[in-house]
Length: 81
Image (cartoon, rainbow, N blue to C red):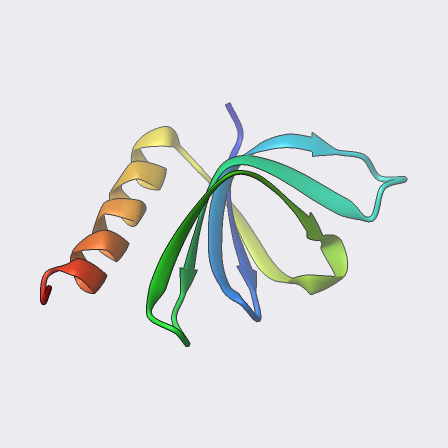
């Protein structure tokens, strides 16, 4: 499965790629986590469509890298509660 880490102005987004059509101006991800550093929130969605024009950068991740990054985000945000 193709896991992507996308960087946007809204934050860091991880999900597995469901659809990416060059004719389409968006990427659809499934099982999506967004790390919104401005609001110090982690949001989880079943799927999310992201406009390619909003993507600042991206990286392909392994499943293990994806889980480790999400775990680090959760530890950073939820240890003080």
